[in-house]
Amino acid sequence: MVQATPGRPLPSPPANGVPGLAEVRGARQNLLGIALETPLWEAPPFPGLPSGKLWFKLETLQRTGSFKIRGASNRMAHLTPEEARRGVIAASAGNHAQGVAYAARARGIPATIVMPKGASPSKVLATEALGARVVLAGADYQEAWEECEALREREGLTLVHPFDDPAVIAGQGTVGLEILEALPSVGTVVAGVGGGGLLAGLAVALHAVRPEVRLVGVQAAAAGSLKASLLAGRVLEGPAPSTFADGIATRRVGDLTFQILREHAVQAVEVTESELARAIFLLLERAHLLTEGAGAAPFAALLAHPELLEDPAPTVAVLSGGNLDAFLLDRILWSGLAADGRILHLTIPLKDRPGALAELLAAVARTGANVYTIRHDRESPTLPPGQASVELELEVRDLEQGEGVGRALQQAGYAVVRKLPAASSPPRRSAAGERT
View 1 (cartoon, rainbow, N blue to C red):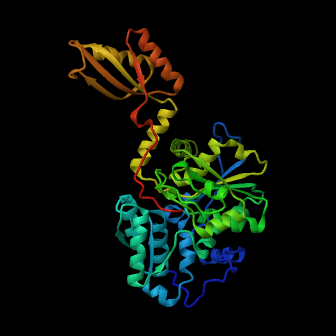
View 2 (view 1 turned 90 degrees about the horizontal axis):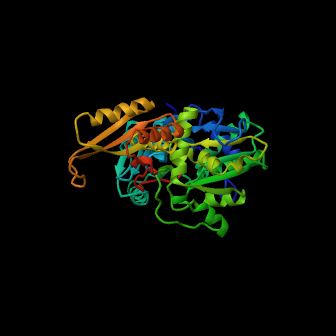
View 3 (view 1 turned 45 degrees about the horizontal axis):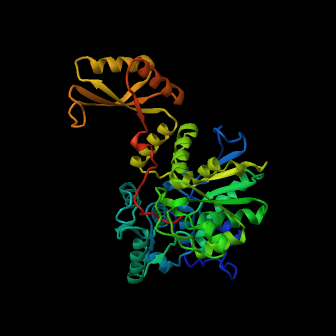
């Protein structure tokens, strides 16, 4: 177990509170034995994107499944002995919670995490399994944060802020050092933005060595405030976020992080819920990488804005996390298959007589489609006497085969009505999000 360093002061950043390259390099030493140096992989071919120009920084393979352990661990490396004895506290819906819990356990520091009552049960259990005391409070992140502040005051705990802290930003900046070492010719780096801690750390580290690197921050359109804030020249707060990408579900970026992002002239883009879901699906199917909504946001932006890859130098998409709820993954996979035309949903009227259903299924079998689900309705009050209705969900190879199935059934005398599967709409979840 790594113990807290007795009496080690927080490095003194410049007067404006912004950490520099020295602080990022110091953070890297503090993370030894706790955070992993994650791989940088060349992306496989994807439809619509040029080959050989895109690389993935795999923070999905980080301990606890996201980059958050970096900033949390660096912050705790600077606690005084008395602060370490009393313990730390944080508010989070998932990734920051696990990062703080892991880093605290590694250093023998008590940790309290306040999570919204609607937080994913799997993330709550994972945080508790890392030894943290979990307090469930509030309907969303904002209410959990308020309880976190009250507990901090009552119990004298030290706050580990998810992003607006120089040591946390320096810790996240270690991602940038690893990118530079693995791919010195990098031209563009794309990362998701909630509170802005990751992108701010990347800006500090990358631009200290290669100021020409372009930085692009990605937000969910349903939780987008960075683009408007950059245009206004000040931090703007948006409405309550409505996105399944809980890692970037935020009303605003941080004050310190915004200062850094503005000074480093970052570019901001937004992606829709459908684009996020599509990116998760493609990363899993084509690259065999499991990402959450926030982790897939950079790739979603590149799919939606391929012009971001026009720079002749390589582009790196930071896949910041892979802690995706299993139930949400199921919906995203179904959504992706439907969008690809590989799930066919048909409604077909039948005569209510023996053998009619068997004849229909035989006709389907001749097309090569595979029945996924079937609903045979003979009792609906909307059906005429002597009529039945069959709803089929079929697995097909692609859109072309799906269209061939419909034509073949029509030629066989069936009146086919094709519908999109209900799950083809973007996945949704509660707004119990956190800031990245």
